[in-house]
Length: 154
Image 1 (cartoon, rainbow, N blue to C red):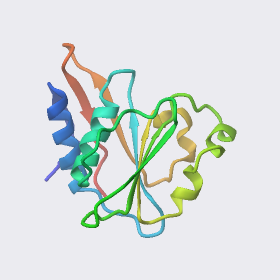
Image 2: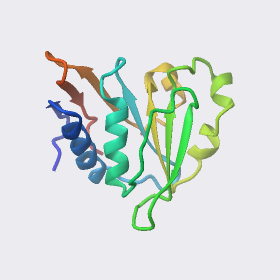
Image 3: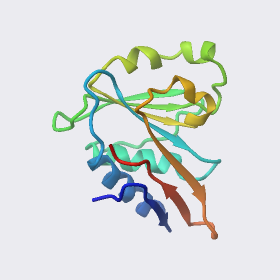
C-alpha cells in the first residue's frame, strides 16, 4: 500500500511506469464525474512516462506518445478496467479557458466512466476538479533519476 504523502525516487523509466501502476491501484473512481490525475513538472521530468505506466495499469497496451501538438488523445480501455476511456491531455500549449474550450475537457469531466490524465496541469489548474489527484515530478541528481511526489490518498 502507498503511504499517505509519499515521495519516491526512480532511476529508470521502467521504475516510473511501475510506480504509476501501483498508484493507479489506490485511485478511487469518482461517481459523479471523471477521475482526474494532474501531472506537474518541468520538461523531461517523466510526466508522459508516468501516464504510460498508468495506462498499462488500466490494461492498455498501445504506444502512448505525448499529445503536445494534438492537446488530447483518447483510448478505449478493456472491459476489465474500472473506466471505459482514458483521456490524455497535454496543456503545455494551453494558457486560457478559451483555448481549453476548444477541447472536449469540460464534457469529459461529466463522465464518471472517464479516467483523465493531464500533463502540465499547473497551467490552468483552477479548471481541474477540487478532488483531482495532483502528482509532482522533478529531475533528480543524475540524468536518469526522478523525484515523484504522490498526493495524499483519500
